[in-house]
Image (tube, rainbow, N blue to C red; front, side, top):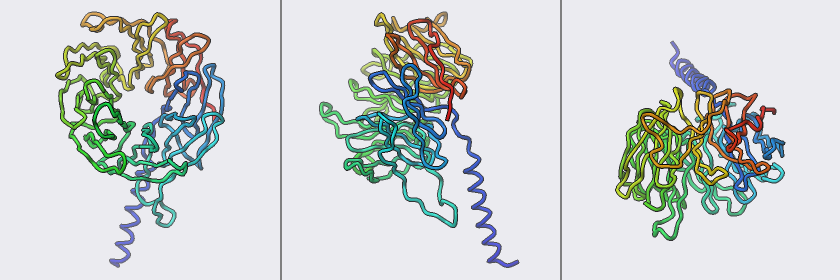
Length: 393
């Protein structure tokens, strides 16, 4: 046998295997959902488009990327712009007023024949913002763009052992007497603290499980709270010390929400939790089986028309639940105060936001069904569906 031909054949076989592996990856099928701070616009990242809707469901504009780009990461809004990553690792800056492209950043890639060498750096999570820098996770780690001169330039890249799916969190609070820091969760089971200026590692902590979700900041106690695929919520000090952990029934996918001294979160076993935050770490915890299917996304805590806090969370069981938070310890073994639950007619798996329409507080949720891709539910009227948006290119 000709050894040269054998080696060439092996190279081609490996190249094809890599190509087929990349093409066969399952893609997320739910949209990224984001809302403006003034509550009048919803941005939807889905398939080939980023779409802007007003509170009445009218389309303001549609943004389309290059060639066959897919968008699934929620957009991040700042200074009249929407920043969003795509499935080819590109970052798009979009004018929030008219949907026109301001710029698009694309990393340089090596080419071999007609193949792009190396894995495609899909951007799945929201972009983190910090001064004149954008921070975004990829399949290999986290990168930073300098946008000070409105010409995006790669500032640095930091490699982790696996993908970064969640939004990097930038902390810069002069009152804390703590240097500006970028916190990053990774599927490689590590939590990282980086220098945001140059990407140098300050510390890393093995969390015992991958972290598809992001970080909840607690400025008062100078802590981070993170959920893991090892079935834990872990409290970590800003200088990288594990302070407390709480074991859950199932994997934790979304972020815990900090409200009024308690953390609220769900897990993939359909359990809903309320965990007290104390000076020493964690205090009393209560939990309840809310659903037979996963509670995947981060809950939303919002005030109703009477000023009462309400927790809203979607489930893979095709329902959206609203829970009263009128008293601590709102979950017991016997009861849970469900204000309403509304059919979504598809798994309700996205992050939530709100818009206001003629005095109504509408909770916006995305689903896996493109015929009712986004739903608007009236918080103060038993979750009544105000409208449903069907995806159209």
